[in-house]
Length: 165
Image 1 (tube, rainbow, N blue to C red):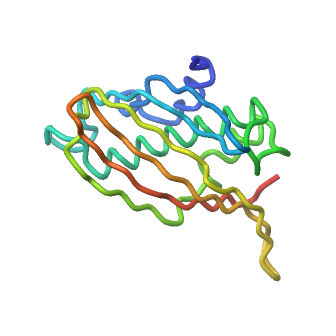
Image 2 (cartoon, rainbow, N blue to C red):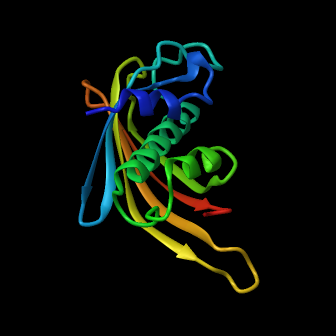
Image 3 (cartoon, rainbow, N blue to C red):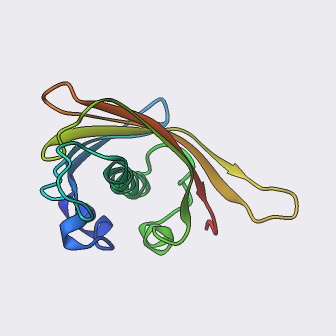
């Protein structure tokens, strides 16, 4: 079930009309955390209605889904990579230190932005310590979105989480 209080806090940095994540259920399998989510975009935050989910909205939804998944993983001790984190660590690092290093999305069929589902998973989370550099977490993720009319979009993102505790 969605932790409503956690979701509200995760979405605090977003402007009210840009809070697209409505619910999220987080699970863990074989040490990998994943989230299954519901979204609604009543009105685009930057463009007239295109009638379909677009790449900017895909990225915003990914961010919200990912932030909730990390926060819930920290809170529940799920997955790997965030074992030493507290929720205070997450709130401190949420915006300045969780960086998208690579993001790709593939639009297979138009997705209705007014009501759609999504899911993402952490494929890997590894601590890296480059010679002479500061340690960071490197995370490979995968995501997908779909709607009731067979709309479909999927993709992958690589995260670099810097200034880790």
